[in-house]
Amino acid sequence: MGRYRNVTILAAAIFFQILGLAIQIRRPAVGEDTSSNSRLIRLWAVSVVAPLEKGIVRVQTSASGVWHNYFYLRGVRQENRDLKDQIEQLRLEQVRLKQDAEQAHRLQALLGFKEQFIGETKAAQVIGSSGSEHSRLIYIDKGSDDGLKTEMPVMTPDGVVGKVLNVIDGSTSQVLLINDQQSGVGAIIEQSRLQGVLKGRASGELVIDKIMADEEVKPGDRILTSGGDRIFPKGLPVGTVAKIAKGTDFIQLTVKPAAMLNHLEEVLIITKRVEHEAPATTRASTRAAEILAQRLPQVPDKPVTPPVPGAATPKPGVPLGTTPNAAGKPTVPSAPSASAGTPAATAPNTGAASAPSAPAAKTTNNTVPGTVPAVKKPAVEAGLPTGPGLTASPQPKPVVSPTTPTKLATSPAATPSTKPAIVSKPATPDKNSQDAPQ
Amino acid sequence: MAVTYTSREQIEVYRFSLPVAILVPLLAVFLQAFIPHIVPAFSSYFDLPLLVTIFFAMARRNPVTGLLTGAAIGLAQDALGSHPIGVYGIAKTFVGFGASSLGVKLDVESVGTRLLVTTAFYVIHEVLYFLIARGMVRLDMHWSWPHELGAAVANAVLGVFLFALMDRLKQRA
Image 1: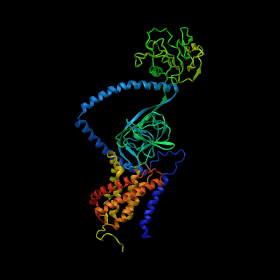
Image 2 (image 1 turned 90 degrees about the vertical axis):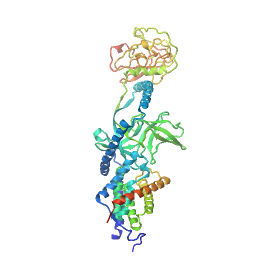
Image 3 (image 1 turned 45 degrees about the horizontal axis):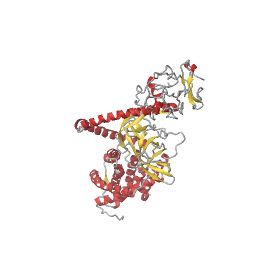
């Protein structure tokens, strides 16, 4: 026995470790939470290593802060000037993006989409890594004391980083990077809207496979989160297509991550997400169709004629494609477009070229609870670009309430050429709605 | 009589004080986790816990101590990762056992031997890790001979300096 003592002990050591492995990689039972079963040995190891890492990172950060904030200020003035210029450019871009966002909100409200917003984030500092090229994870200096939980998304301003894998203690957590082979992110290609699952490879590459070979994807296409994984909010940047490997049936995309996964210092953890339906009674709600209309060819400006009171303010419940006259009865607009009354969401060019009888600036608000005012504030007031051809069309807008079901109805006064319009019923009938045609 | 490639004088068995035996492996695991934060490529090429395992195993020249040291260091390294615990543990257990068994037969004090032994054990360690991770844990593994051989040589070079540094911590048994 003494002769084989060493080998016996080796076999025993290997056997127990294999047994341990087998226990860990068993298939989890249905409903079992695998994310919370942090091994005790893992807890011990991290508890020993993490404080050291935190201490060193703090000292390093302090020293670096003193150096960069008080001594190494070369080029700061020039940088300041550059940044001011950049701010000016970004302000201009912000105006444009704001309009796009408002338009998107309007369309989402029309379609009853649930919106997801990043409600709250926590900033954390990266204090270490797994130390192995086979396991791509990082340690951060925030934990349960800061409200962190497993599966919370982690990102940088550049893009998605990963998700919280384990909350070790009050001030330490493990983050699994998106390029780890255990990761999977629901992704969508921005241009083509193709969806897939972004996975990490053992080599650290990010790939999306199982994309049909006939789909059109090109290098440089942006990849965003699709929200399909229920972890990452939709629309966060993930990366860009770096390489396309074509197979017979499928293509595989290699993705260059947007975030610098190898040089992470600070990250943001999304601790709270807000999900709600886009409110339909927001100021922006009626402008979306106007914005869409403005982007299409316009007829030259016409002399502004004062509006007939009530003519440009259709009453709630009035079918689209009609405008109520002074008597409150619906009439067909003088020059209905081919798609008059079609919801903006489906026909963005509604009435774009139709001659406006009264400019938007002269229209008034008429908001009824549960409905969207058909015509809203003037373009100038609403912060929209104005100019020749940009006068908002008084084309009747869809009157849609997210709280009430919409139905298709044919305008009672419409000519046979008039298309069906969306009509909504107010959630609670009020006296205004009594005038509305049934 | 066992045939060895060393003279009786060269077969020295060393021991380490308890603080050294605990703190040096711990420091190696810590640095392995921390340095990639500053130098991201470090973890792709260097394995400090492996070098410490080889050093302790060869210096003690006791297979049981060697394999236990390897197992402990490997499990600690596993604990810092996301994969099931035991993959590094098993690989380093074998390396600890092999290095200590070899330490009895070879003069492991010379630079040349250390270079060769470290290169060989690095490759053995990576092969074992690859087989265990792929065969038992079903991980998607990537193998590249140029990378592994390059990393083996890099570790061996680093090991020569590191071993010389750690020689100062040895105590004659």
